[in-house]
Structures are given as C-alpha cells and as structure tokens.
Length: 151
Image 1 (tube, rainbow, N blue to C red):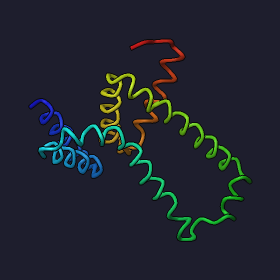
Image 2 (tube, one colour):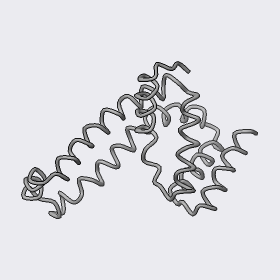
Image 3 (cartoon, rainbow, N blue to C red):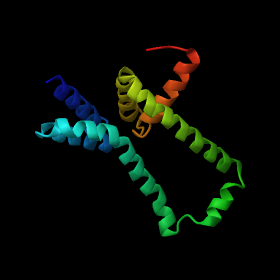
C-alpha cells in the first residue's frame, strides 16, 4: 500500500509541476505494478532500463546526422572554437561520472532514494529534465570519495 501512495504522490507532484515525462513514467510504473507479472519485470526494467534509456537518447542524438542537419563540416568546426573543446571535455566527464554513478546506485540504495527525490524536486520546482540521476550519482560518488564518507 505504501508503494502505491508513494507513486501516487510522485504522480500528483508531476501533474502539479506539469512535467509530462514524470507523469508518463509514474503512470507506466503504476500500470506495470498492477499487472500480475510485475515482480518478474521490475528487476529486468530496473537493471536494463538505464541502458535502454541511453540507447533511446543516443538514437535521438544521431537523427540529425541521419537527416543531414549535422555534417562532417560541423564536426570539424567543433575543434575550431573553445565551446567545442569544452563540450567534448564535458561529454567525456559526463560519461565517466555516469559510469561511477551506475556503480554508486547499485552499491548504495539509500543514496538512490535521495537522488530520486532530488531529481523529482529539480524537475518539478526548477523545470529541469530528469536526465541526470546517473550523473548526479556519479557526482555524489566523487564528493563522497573526496570527503571519504561512508554511508
């Protein structure tokens, strides 16, 4: 019963915050939870979902290349300005943080709760996009490691 209330509260917050992605995610999770085979599917979705999401995001990122909106000429221009180099560096940093974040999420479930809460608050209150929990987890890992804190 508590899980339904929690999911319902997240759905309500998403509706109040007018966040379509979180509304859809909440409804989908609630629908799956209502199905008799949910206990078999949840572990699969939880373990593979981030990879599926990254794959979908990667597809969306590659579409402008497929449509010709981004060309080799654009790629070459990236190397000619500081913003391009910064973007490349940030891409590398985010990839590394994401790797650490995935490990952090599996090693510290209690941190996951805080990250989910923080992500929901960022989405609803600050009109953010829920694309960063893994990165946030990677940043958490870095800060906790630097401070040598153990949860």
